[in-house]
Length: 183
Length: 447
Image (cartoon, rainbow over all chains, first blue to last red; front, side, top):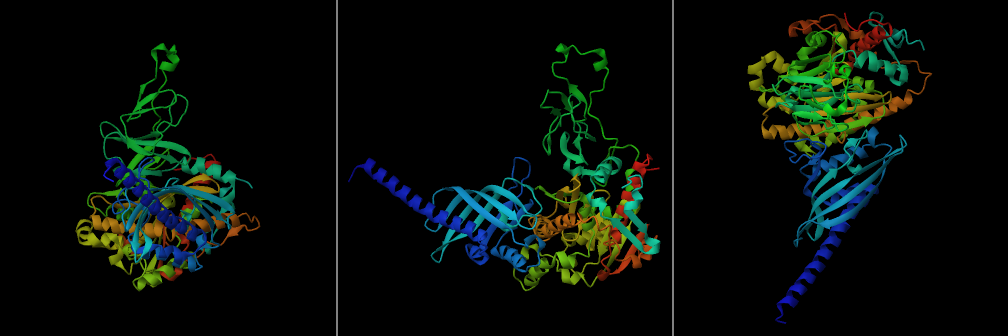
């Protein structure tokens, strides 16, 4: 009581605990997102995103620099809402996409999940490093994609959702197809 | 197989209603090696847009077949193209894809060249006890035998025995103009690189780029996506074409000498063409006839390995053979210089939706190419039957439509979309056979 040092230590400890709690929340959302892709639970995966989400996979501008403006530069994928993401699964579920049938099997791994900035009550910024192993049973070959991703999570009606995801694909000399579940 | 008679591989008898290709042209490593020597190293190959090289000392690196090429604008503003190979030990000189530098210095032993390809430094030359014989040698980068620019499209040739570029392109220029004259200040590649490979022969892409027959079978999943979009769901920002509306249109093909070919289709939804947003200005600049043609769907093959597709937003594609069963694809979104920001954004969404290897159409194509390559292991299948559609509607020489357009194609087909003609494949294979035959017979490629 009345000891400023003690108070600031206490605040720092509170802050660290709060951050750890936010990080745990974020990690769970990110891991679910990865697992739902591997388990092909497309509707559950879509439900992790807000309707007005931004989903962006920028291209590289040069060997060493990324593009920065999806309205002026080419993206691998850019959607300004969840509607674009929904199309992906319409295509897959049609059963008439040779690239999607037989379905590839994937294993997404996440690591280095860190908060970016200070979490707020209803918003968390977080990043991850990811790898995705993709096996194509038709052509009997495996591919590996890897990179990192930046998320903005928001709390909507008591649930944490992805409002923004920017995926950096590090190995952009691509094999014959890449779909949303490969990255 | 007797490689001395290449005509054995292309059964080209349109007068008798026959055009067939042997499967070996996709699978035989010996033929692949001959293609490098007698096609890629003996004809014009697309290199770059001149708008990629705006400033003095701007450069890009690319390749003609397997041969690395450096294209750069020199201090005086002149564009040159050289083998991207240091004269000292044959090392790849410039190692990055694009940039700006006055001097290209080899990382191995430090020999330096200026942006015009002149050798300006041999490291520690004075102390090197070089002989007069060495001093008498030319140490500059080796220039391509030919370099020419057609409306911003730079082409190079490793052989001097090629016709002038304008003659090589012939009346195919009409269709290049339709792409390159969409903007008042020229055309550019939108930044952002898309490069991928597929495990199949390069000619599968050559064919598929002008194959309208596969749309209703390979891309039916995209039709399912479009059904939803029609009622307002899905990725509306792409404002993508409704393929169903295309199937009732008239279209056709034109074939030209030197292997070039185009398929075209009238466009039901002209307002969904990015160029439509500035169509009044385009009409004023190029005239109604050409502006109307810009609104039609046009997919081209510029033999041997470049395609301009204006079927959704405008694409330029280079497909480079790596091995008999491996091909490298580089695709570019081409747009008018100085385009309005909102049109540019829409163009990008439409392009990504259809053409990206992470999009909705291309992955289904590339995977099918790989299935085709695997199927061609069946040596028992001699002749492929995929070159016959529309042969019964083939018009030899200049058609009435071509006359109106002021072009003289060697052949054409015109009719309802349902023909889905495969005759567009004939000019590239006819030229393939001609160049290969010239090569194995020890004759010149042209003349």
